[in-house]
Length: 158
Image (cartoon, rainbow, N blue to C red; front, side, top):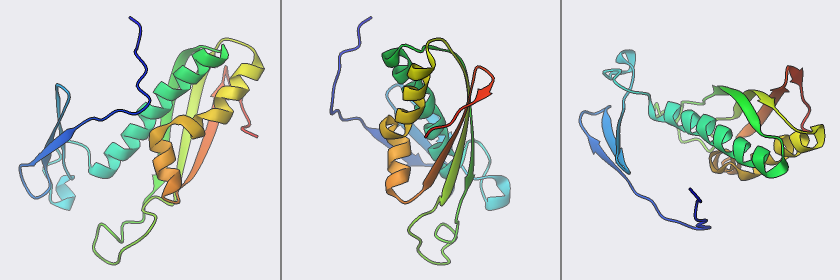
């Protein structure tokens, strides 16, 4: 199946507040629950909104890395993405407004890739420029650190 390119496109997400902490979100033909943990007044029936942002970053990292890898001729045969972040929760706890809720995000990417090192280097160098979630976080002031291990060897992005 050939994917038709759409440089700019629209999509819709709808949310229904079921409780003060739990939302049921509908997008495409998918329904998911976003909630807070029990110790924060929720029912723990789904991830927190901020966890969904990081889940989106993990998914975007995976998809865009694969697109880049295929583009540069270094296809990914296995990939694990692990994210560790620091969150300044003063804003969400109503202490004071803040500009950068996630000061630092570390993405640890372990991948098996085929292809020449030059192609692998291009994937590593370009990921941060093409993942929309990463770009959104970077533009908010978040420091994004990508640590790559490819074929068992730690890589440098510059």
